Structures are given as structure tokens and as C-alpha cells.
Image (cartoon, rainbow, N blue to C red; front, side):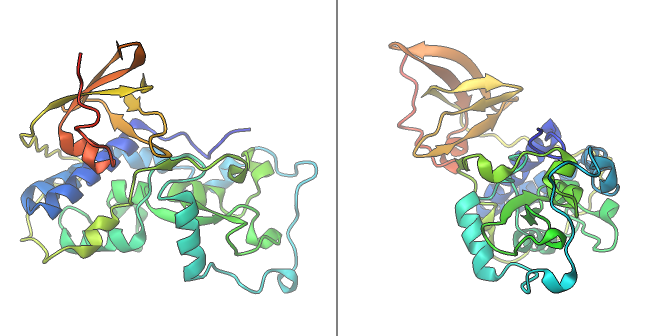
Length: 298
């Protein structure tokens, strides 16, 4: 059984990292840097990842009539509550965090997305009627809530039958069952909490910045702000597929995308195996880690 409709791609996590940096820049008053980072996160390559699983979700079906599956029920027998209540959504976010329970990618709520689009309309386009004319990073990280057992099959609109989902896993799953799609039930896997707030820290922002002009999403605008670099040792961390992953710290796993501003190597310190991480201290602070606590002492 597979875990999700489609495996996340590196561009997805790059968009997440860029949007995280943009939020920090905005809150620091660096509005031009924030807008440039948001623009860079609008990677058109993400649409190639979303399509066709997004628009042609019937192609995701592996078995149309799997043995022992649920079946559609008459409308008169379905849950009278079609949608989750606000309190249900709060409970789900508290349980699942801002992370898709299927593929594990970080997600951003529509409220935060609308705020970003309002504050930075040139860098964050959003056409309600055309998915191809939207900010691809925000679209790929769009927070949804999914009925694990489809509503049409008698699934309830409650916390027990729902999970936090990204847009691709929700839209790609559509009306189909887990057995039809060959998906493992995400509720059977323990929730792994990560230090990610869904950019909710932006909900207390100030006035919108001055509008800037940007080329179309096929262009590229890179901002490389100068940041101090520190060296840290994280016991139990490992490197995989271009990312450093920490072990659970205070009950939460963290990850760092490796690149020009983030370097990591396997190492040991006084018998403890882990990774040496070189990056700006604010990248640790953003993930709820203390730079002083993890300062590397060879």
C-alpha cells in the first residue's frame, strides 16, 4: 500500500523554505526581500507535479472494485453534517499540525494564503477560476481537510474520519476510497509533530508593502541576504535526499534543506553520532531550537 497520491518533490520543500524566509523577512520589515522570496517560490515546475493527479483524479484509481470495500450510500443515509465545523478544524490542526497526514508535506491555511496574496499581489497571483494562474508554491502547500472514508460512502464529517491534507492528496483522492487508490489509512500511522506553524505568524502583520513589478513565473529572481553563519552539532540527526532530519526533539522532528546557506556533514562528538550543521542561527530559532544549546564544540 502506498502512503500518498504522489511523492513530494524537492521543489515543494524549496517553495516551503522560501515562503518561510519570506515570512521572517516581512516580520523584520524587509518587505522587498519578502516579496522577492515569495516570487521565487512561484515555481511553475510544481504544476507539472500536480497535474494530472490534480485534474484527472480518476487516473489515480488502481482497483475500481476492490474486494471488501465500502460502497456509495443513498443521500438520505449520509451524515446530515456535510462539512467540518470550525471547532472540528481547530481540533484537527491541534492533533495533526500543519502537515499533510498522507504525504507529510507542510501546509498553509487559506487565511494565510489570502493574506500573502493581498499583501504581495504582484508576487502571489491567485485566480479563483484558473488553477494554472495561481502562485504554484501556495497552491501546492494549500491546507485541506479530507474525509478518509468518503462522505458519499457514509463517512462522517467529524474529527475521527478526517485528517489534515495538502491540496494534491485531497483533490487527487476525490470521491475514491483508500482501497480503490491503494492507499494506507493515514490514521494508522502515529502523528509526527514538526515545528511548523503554517505561517500563522503572519496573521499579525502590519500594512501592505509598496507594489513591485515582477516578470512572469518563468523568470527568476534570487535574493541572497547576508546572514551570520553558526556551526551546530545535532545528535541523532541524519542526512537524506538533500535534507538534514533531526530526531524528535521535545516530541517534534525538524528538517533543513541543504544548499548554499545550509551545509551539513555526518560527525560524532564525544561518542554521540549526529550531524554538524552550518547555517544562520535564525534557521534553528524558526524551528524552535536554541542555537546556544546546539553550538558545536569539537
